[in-house]
Amino acid sequence: MSGHDHGDDGVSRRKVLECMTWAGTGVLWTITGGVPRSLGIIDSAEAATAAAPGMTFLQISDSHVGFDKPANPNALGTLEEAVNKINAMPVKPSFMIHTGDITHLSKASEFDNADRIISQSKLDVHYVPGEHDFLDEEVKFYRERYGRGTKGAGWYSFDAGGVHFVGLVNVVDLKGGGLGNLGAEQLAWLEDDLRGKSKSTPIVLFAHIPLWTVYPEWGWGTEDGGRALEYVKGFGSVTVLNGHIHQVMQKVEGNVTFHTARSTAFPQPAPGTAASPGPMKVEDAKLRSMLGVASINFKQNEQRLAIIDTPLQG
Amino acid sequence: MKTLNRRDFGVAVAAAILIPVTTARADDSNMEVHIDNFVFQPPELKIKVGTTITWTNRDDIPHTVVSAGKFRSKTLDTDDKFTFTFTNAGDYKYFCSLHPHMTGMIKVE
Ligand SMILES: [Cu+2]
Image 1 (cartoon, protein in one colour):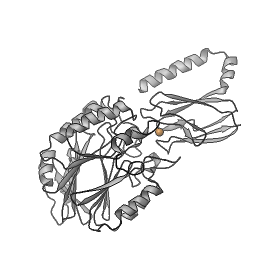
Image 2: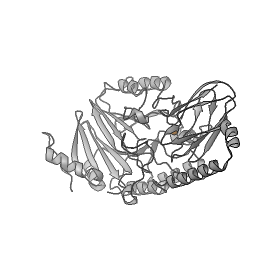
Image 3: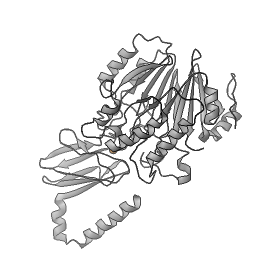
Image 4: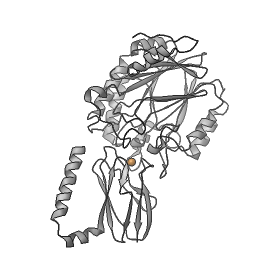
């Protein structure tokens, strides 16, 4: 199926249904004035073409290197498949972000293996940690590798292609009964970081656990995420990217687009559809359709954002 | 993994049946909490001072057992155990520091 534009006058019901049928193949979204429009279903080659000539970056998440249970006995192997997929893209993305859980048990060997595979993409990678990356007693492996130049537990910001990116850490100091946590120090830093930025600057916040409340019963949300979102309220285009829940989920609220990427390791159930959020065992033939990467494109001066989720296998 | 757990459980049950009642009573000072599907089971236990509790993680995802200022396990991978002996009376609220919605309670009297 080739890419098709739904036109400026809205999306016809027929085409929406068409897109939903093919949702597993990858959907290209554009955001115009805060309203998402599906441009249709495309494979990664068409996506890259459709996305050009804006700035494109990739999101990869939840690699869980070291995981070897039945849901995916070879998480390192599927990470390598994802990297191969990235290397085969016709247009090289500007860089990559990794939204955490690089490793499963924070072992030095797991970080080594993850590095070895991810570096094959030859892309700059900007990381934020997941809770699985902070399991070593002294919490030093992640910070020694990826924490240089970051504040606190590893938060930082940078600018690329006219977009202001902020990497946040919401996996430390988690309180009993609660959700993800940013903490007062990080929130104060964020407020300060955004101060003075022009409201027309597109903002991308990325963190491991969703900043929005997806499903509190499973801890899928961030206690003080709302505070962070208040600080970006006045900006014209805000994108919030996360991992942690191992499935594509998207919502738009005003000028804020929330998007969750797939894992490269194993799927997790949709909220409330299983006894727990633990790894979901699916038929071997189906696994790769539930793992994948996301690429995000900005068209400057148009405030258009396109997010393309590409599974490892359609 | 599930199969293995079930087999372990079978062995445990068989062993328990073979232990004479007197020994079983002495075993009251040792109790178990299992982690299954992101839940501490049982979620609340009432025990006597001197009781030792062993937590076993039966999930495919690591968990921890943490009671602020009281005890803190290392990260428990699948089938890993953590043991703590309660020498003081009181209520011990605990949780998993990786999945803080997982909570449990030990009441020691
Ligand atoms: Cu846990």
